[in-house]
Amino acid sequence: MESRDALFEKLKKPWDVIVIGGGITGAGLLREAGRAGLRCLLLEQRDFGWGTSSRSGKLVHGGLRYLKQGQLKTTWHSVREREKLLREYDGLVEPVGFLIPTYGENRLAPLLLRAGLLTYDLIAMKRSRRCYRPMDAVRLAPALKTEGLKSGFWYRDARTDDARLVLRVIREGVRLGGTALNYARVEGLCRDRAGRVRGVAVRDVETGHTLEVMGQVVINATGVWADKVRAHVGKPERLRPLRGSHLAFPRWRFPLPLAVSCTHPEDGRAVYVFSWEDITLVGTTDLDHEYPLDDEPRITPREGSYLLEVVQRYFPSLNLSGNDVISTFSGVRPVVNTGRKDPSKESRDHVIWVDIGLVTVTGGKLTTFGLLARETLASARGWLPAAAGTPCSGRETAAGKDVPTLPGELGRPRRRRLMGRFSPDDAAALVREAGTGELEAVPGTGTLWAEMRWAARHEGVVHLDDLLMRRVRLGILAAGGGMQHLARLRNLVQPALGWDDSRWEDEAARYLNLWQEAYSPTLIN
Image 1: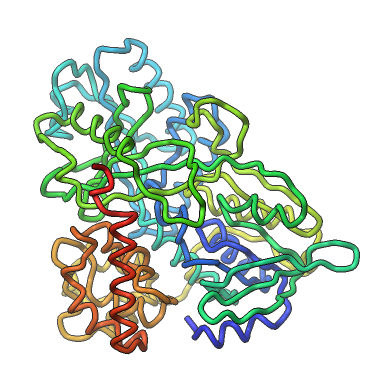
Image 2 (image 1 turned 45 degrees about the vertical axis):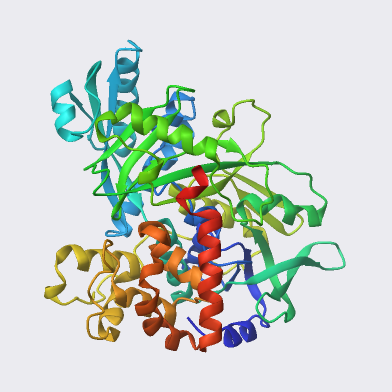
């Protein structure tokens, strides 16, 4: 990416679309606007993906549980978008098998599951469902509790690195002519004499520099902060922030070759346990988030106990406890408030509101970000240039363009991973720039040292937590947040970031404090 000074200078020109919010929805808008030939600017008050989009459940799923709640529309869109993402982002969005074990408590459960999985397959237009006898199900998940096990239903869904997906989509949008700037806080809306929103007042969080930026339409894609932006045009609050928290276990301590959907004995909710990168994740919770939205969300001891109860109930032979957890994380979902007592009963459908030049999109799921972006731009069409095209799905790589190849000695899994997370062109450049030993993995993870140097040079890193929590996921994957690797990391990235020794020490202390306050396993005690 260009330097911050160069990017801030570009803000002075007029834009077709100004997007507020650099999560997955904003990233999708930047990409789809570029595909439509629109001049698009994305502004993010913190880091790209800082909010919900780096703290999701990491699943690109069709929403099987929403069928149970009668939300067929949500499931339909989710399944179709999942299939697109699997095609477009091979190596970043990956298929994963799910097992739903059934025990003797509910005789109707197998019938309902058969019906739900049949619907799932019909929407995807491919068969993936299977039903296993108890012993066959245990072969798929060897640590699974066998007592009372009646059957196991298997189906296919997908998983991803959510923060990398945000970065990949943003970089696609930039290649298509867009501009994206993090740590650029929108502090007000600009209006014309008729009262229509025509721009934003933005402040560079790092320098304090302010500027008014003008555009044809402003799109509010700020997720749980959407009510705060709409308040500038006098609109009431409509959202219900819901917190979802996760536990992370080291893979060696909690080996699991596939994902298992567990029914929590307390409330009947589905809690997912699955391998992700080099750890096993357990989540999520679904609670009203009653803390300031600008603070780092964190798990509570009650949530930790709730998730451990599932692990200990379904995988008793492993004798897992809170002492085995290496990290935690929590995200806050933007859900439209309909007043339901049970947070889990609120619809996950997205909504679009149009207010005199300000278009707001919120709700929805990680899986459906492309659909949200296309529908939002369609709703703003009346304010956009007549020559603007229609956004369409498709690979970033144009037909007939040569796709770079990576050295064979990397191995197929590693080549596929790099090309998925960074795009073929960026992956090839990353490998070319790698120094001696940098194509080796950080111990205990699949992350290459070269990924961190590349991110520091090219991916808009402003603070150390941008790098370790979102560009790579060392803060979740490594015990202690990866602090044991900081010495080598310093040699790799400090020169690329242009930091002196004092700045590095400040950033390291800042990162350690943040990790302890929002990601540490001690939070569940």
